[in-house]
Image (cartoon, rainbow, N blue to C red):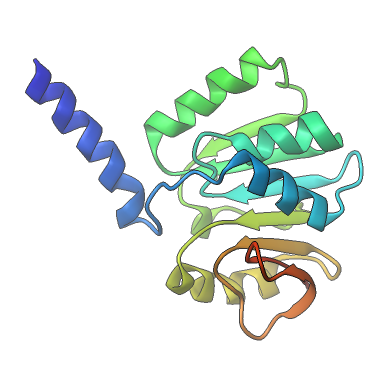
Length: 164
């Protein structure tokens, strides 16, 4: 039984690595700083690509009054996020979608947050330019989006805000 549980746990850990980035949760201090640098206004739509356990989408709604959507490919983290959304009673403002963010429409976003690998970020640039409206902000943690206009940055914490 222990081997089965271990095998399932390892499969979930490897799942997100295969599709873009390993799951490495952003510390809550960094989440808050990313959202502050985005300068979220109440009611704005925040999308988090590879939303993991939902901490960014939940904090965006709780602390800043945003409407937020996470896109997560890992079924375990997707269901875990849904439970957290129910726990915080945020079903009217926070949603999570199960799937690959490369195939999801981002055109409704006012702000997009990402903590992915550099290669994945590079693959997303064309999608951002094609789908996001002018003025949409993209907040990255650690890895950059070369060629897009940097609006604000915190080099010490490696947080960058870009504007389409």
